[in-house]
Amino acid sequence: MKMHYSWPVLILMTLVLGLTACEDDSKEAAFTVADLPTERDAEAGKELFEKGDGDAPACKSCHNTGSEDGATGPGLGGIGSEAGNRVDGESAEEYLLNSIIAPGKHIAEGYRNNMFSKYDDKLSKQQIADVIAYLLTLN
Image (tube, rainbow, N blue to C red):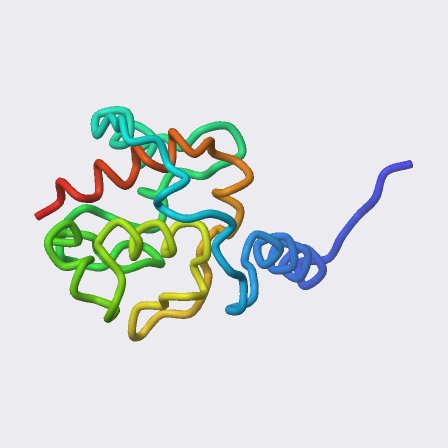
């Protein structure tokens, strides 16, 4: 049986599917920086940033590494030197970890919580540590 959908139905289905990747703003981080491996590979993190992994989308799909804004997320140029100053009491690593695995905790001004919220399920702690290592190189 062949199904035909109207454009409004297809648009609604796309919006619903897109929103399922976003979490409400109250999601807490599933783990802390202390739970991450201390050995980190910024080059591996750069590859994950650019290409993603399996069901984990590439960060690059919404962010760029310059100062200009990305498609749907803020530009991350300078985040390596700024992250530790964004939230009182959070180190740069803590800020970046929370931004990745509990994105509703830190929403950049002018943006909504549209970030993929399942990196803590889709990436290993090593992969997340590697992405953080890469982001810390963006000065």
